[in-house]
Picture 1 (tube, rainbow, N blue to C red):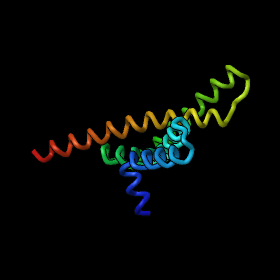
Picture 2 (cartoon, rainbow, N blue to C red; picture 1 turned 180 degrees about the vertical axis):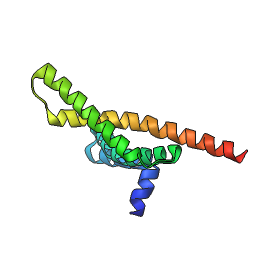
Picture 3 (cartoon, helix red, strand yellow; picture 1 turned 90 degrees about the vertical axis):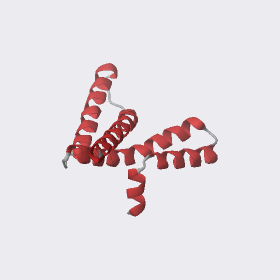
Picture 4 (cartoon, rainbow, N blue to C red; picture 1 turned 90 degrees about the horizontal axis):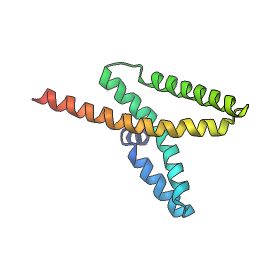
Length: 124
């Protein structure tokens, strides 16, 4: 449990650990990057949810994240159905999960900077 908490607070650690481990094992930068993104997204979901809760003094962060991921799944699935006539679940989940990585990374940086700014403003 303590390891999960540390990795959720500092989600860039699992990214570098997984990337380094996969690169040494497979010798392929592309697959190492993809695996690192997939693993880190899991930790980013919890981290950004907690930062959202701290920033806005709420308990809705995790649920908001899940709702946004489900809405994105619906949009991607609908687009696939319109374009190809069928839904490839694997591609849909991968696309949403990797989009979540980019958005959650941005959210992590944004909420961290906002929290630091708020902390320093309270100290003055």
